[in-house]
Image 1: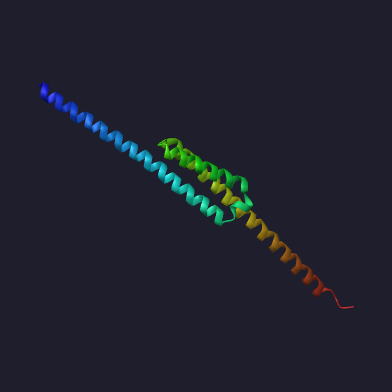
Image 2: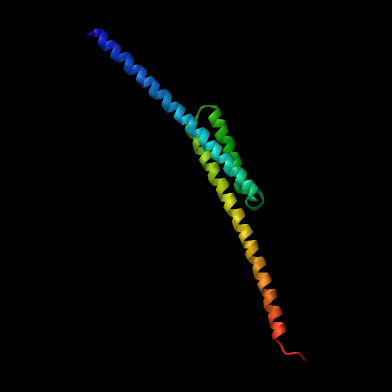
Length: 129
């Protein structure tokens, strides 16, 4: 009876150890995934004009990504994932700001073209003197 209890205890301890190892691996992978997503978001924001349109947000995104990588290197996976998620948000805000700036510029150019067209139409409609 003692032997079967001892075997059961060993199996239980081994199962717990495996579960903890799997959980640790999952946390590690989650942080790595978040960091990869943040890097991609920062790259996309850079290509979309984020540094010019939203330099503060881009700097914040890069700083938070650096903190995420530092925490990940120390095996602090939860803070690493959190910093990476924040970096991702800042990069998305920078990209959205860049898109808004481009849209506003295009709208202003369109309005100027429309105004010129109206002036030309009014000039053509006036009787010759």
